[in-house]
Length: 366
Image 1 (spheres, rainbow, N blue to C red):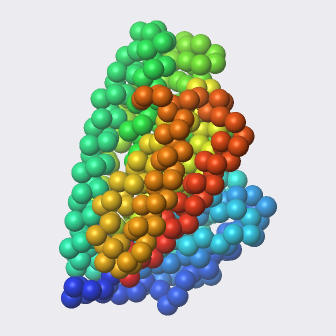
Image 2: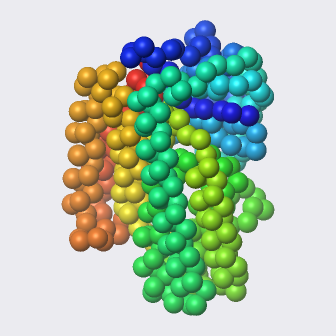
């Protein structure tokens, strides 16, 4: 099944793909329900308007077979409405899901796409070039991730704790930059990056954060070596799958926003690296990855919106200036060293950047 998450644009004589709906598909999320106003739509652009009427922060996903994520929108607080635009070019049965509390498999329902539509990138050279450039970026990042994970794993297995601690955050940089791509593979992302509080009952705690706990809290355990080996196997699998994945311009646009959502829901709160407190390194990597996606899309953004690009530039610069203020050479301060006011300033800068980033998908979809 060939699937894309890209919307079309006009201009330059490009052919518009057919619309996948006759208006936004309303999704009403609550703490125990996920109401989707229409569960069938023709292939093309699908726009979901997700309103959270519950008491918990929620997420919304569109899944293909094997729990591959076609699109997601995170950090939907109570009372808020967020939009997700996804392009699906071939018929099939998919699943929608709301995740109240942002945990578990979500409240799911079937969603059927009928007919077919042309891929927007096939008709637009700017979008095609954007995806080619970003796919090379993903390939480079996952290759480096595999190489650095191997060194990290060697240090863990040899009991070189100080070296492993040093390598921990520098290795994770490559993962955090392309996390939205990793999240498309529903089995690999939690295996590599799940935090212990997010696990379902009985689910095994593996990946980077399990080793983080071993290195900074409990000390290396009898199974730490096996956990490290599994991490390397999973990272190698991610490299293979991510390199082969066909990305599209809406993947880039949605991913750029998703990376800032990662900051807002985990890094700014200090929850992501609860043992090592190296959250600012992850924060920087998320910003780097978001900026890389926007850079690839920039020609298309500028052609469709004369001011959005410069707004994004200024907001990225403001976030970067704050991050740099907590850096000494290549090393960031531990998150526990920040004052409440400094955390508040970071959160405000992220929110200010998040707003124009939320506009990119709609601009790309024109």
